[in-house]
Amino acid sequence: MANYLSRRRFLTTVVGASTFAGLAGGSEVRTPTSGPSSEFEFPLLDLHVHLDNSTIDKVLELPQARTVRFGIVEHAGTKENKYPVVLSNDSELTQFLAMLENKPVYRGVQAEWTDWMGCFSKETAARLDYVLTDAMTFPGKDGKRVKLWEDDALEHVGFTNAEDFMDRYVDWHVSIIENEPIDIMANMSWLPGPLARDYDRLWTESRMRKVIDAAVKNGVALEISGSYKLPRLPFLKLARAAGVKFSFGSNGRYPNMGKLDYCLEMARILGLKKSDIFVPAPDGQKAVQRRWK
Image (cartoon, rainbow, N blue to C red; front, side, top):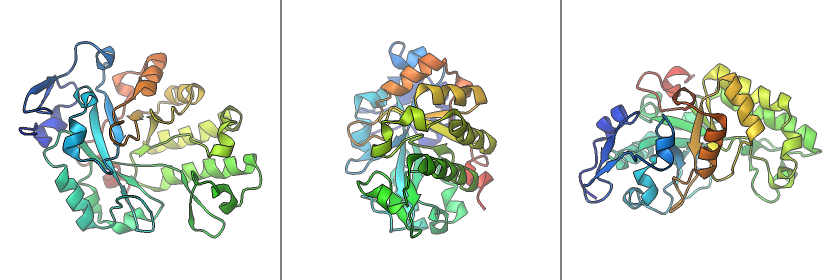
């Protein structure tokens, strides 16, 4: 897997770039003249890709890597967070950055909980291209973190009824958006299994607007999730009208990264333009540089 396009050149030419090199044996890979990416005036970026048990070279051999640029994210925060890999200090983050150096990808982290910033120096975090997070880890009754996708999660968060939970959940989204130096709010509008069937009823316009307004005010992009097929169209229409920027994310593990069918379907319906799409900011304008407290 030789002769990758240099990372510097990739990052400075990806928007509107016509070529990038070497995903297979050093051959040149061109932006397609047909297929999904040719329909849009913006580059297709999957900024929510996890390596987990794969490798970067293996991922870049996937056919979709020829038409979609990947942003590789690793979980970042304290070791209390249980994932295959959790970056928890400057040394581990530096190793992650070095692993992806000179690869034609963006480098990001998926921040965990609200104490992740204490794990890193601002200077090292600023070497990342972007930071994303989500609201799926929620404060429990005892103040400890609760993974809302776990079967007994609602028992641990003081759940009394769906309406009360939703108000707290929306406030939790807003708190994260307002207080953490993130670029992207991922897995947007996801609900725990017992509530998912009532998505359209529980995500009222006022609740959607509260999150959307916070995102616009703080310059945080909202992810359109290819895996969860969320947010649904009413949410996205409100966000588009409010001026939100969107990112696309598969939340993919090998070999499912880069699968953005739902994202592209929503982009077509909404008529998304280049100005609607989040692209990692240049040095000096990243969220960790603008908003790190």
